Image 1 (cartoon, rainbow, N blue to C red):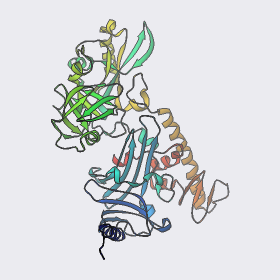
Image 2: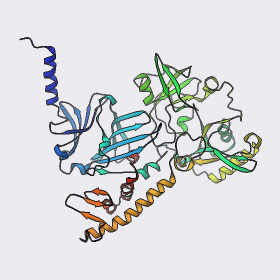
Image 3: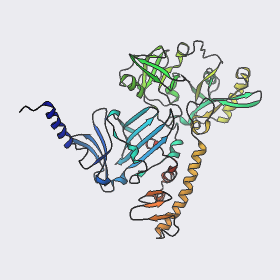
Image 4: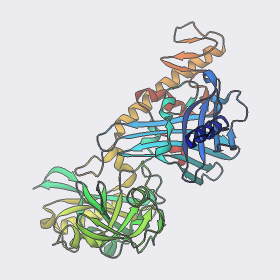
Amino acid sequence: HIISMKAILFVFLLFVLQTDNLLKSDEQLLFGFTTEKGKRVVLATGKGGAYIVYRFGTSDKVELEYPKSTVQSWEKMTYSGYFRGSATEGMDMNYVSFKNGKTMYILYQVYQGDETKIGIKIKNTDTGAIIADIRGVKSTQKGDLSTLRGDDRIKQSDEYVSFERSYEDFHVNSKNIYRIYLNLHKDSEFVGTDCETHAPFGPTVKDRMPEVINYLRLAKNDGQTLISVGTSKFLEENVYLADSSLASVLTVHFLEGDPHTSLIKPMHVVLTESRAIKYFGKTRELLGKSMIIDGANFTVSGIVEDLPVNSHLKMSMFLSHSSLAAFSYSNYDETAWVGNNEYTYLLMKPGTDLAAFNRKIADLSSSLKEILNNGVYQAEPMKDVHLYSNKGYEPDVNGSAKLVWIMLTIGIFILVIATGNESRSRSGNTKSDGLVAYSTHDAVFYGVARTESPCRDVIAGDVVDCISISAGSYGSAAAARLFS
């Protein structure tokens, strides 16, 4: 008999599936993918959810398995998540982390806007440094980490408060970066605030005020930008024109190109890593490549890592600021105080007195009274923008400091009650007041079900996690602290 090639292929595939050491026959896949280098990542549960296990390797060789013992395996992993609904800037971030010695492994599945990223980051717990970021191929993804959201078998680290307060922390100079805004007046009456500025403001204060180390101007290309690469066309948002000081003021990691010169020449573009992959399918050997952006020819001069999600600036690419005249505004003159259409950020000397500096730029505003129509320039810490700003022409939807403090207050309130309840449970009086009912399997406290009291961690000193877990019922939360 002649055996067909299809039959041979079927037998081969069956053999491969049966000998896959990464997923056993009685296990259920929770989440898995193939990495860009062909390795496989699997997060699986045993029959009936008896255990949870992580494996990394190939179909015929397990290179890493955690934990080795299935006993109490659920307690050795932590799920963190954050969800924010929005038509254009929605976020759904999911992480599962575990420690193996002095190394932390962080599985991630992150959706923001119209992009999903999957992979695993490896972090040194002593130094906090990211050792590796192993990216997954999206098309190979199986399962979903979000299925663990609210699953009381795994530790839930809901960190809404921590995440909202972590905006801009990834910038090395975050404490010394300030954003400029313009208070608007009609005659002497305050009528509003605009966070866009005039082009000459940054160069002017750098020349006149010694506390200013450097400035950065960012002009957002409003609406959707048409990108053409060969015969392919894309519509892109969050395209900014930026000064060459971009990497000197903000923390932006270059993968290709010179951080200090990539944005000097007109008609040059620096792409974020995700956009480089989107347009060219890779992030290396792209310098000198051509792109047509809104009908104008640009040359790729750099590739940078995507900025973290906890930033009020959502930026997909950077066009050189010197391109403005040729690209967007034919009459653009960066020395003219005409039109306030760009954001200005200042890198200040450490220890700068903000109140004193604001008096100085208010005096500068007075000297430009007619040009500014009685407007007054002021500076605010960049770290305050997300929660406290909410001015006119913000580049992104702001958070709410009021909501964060409400959640923190609720968390503290629940913490106090739960701590008292913990004391009563230890004395054996577990059901006397009806607040808590313990069984052999779980503890129930105002709708929070866990194998222990939700605030037992307080005894160990982890107050923030306890507050976050208590407050997490308002909404899912973030794992930004994993990477800090």
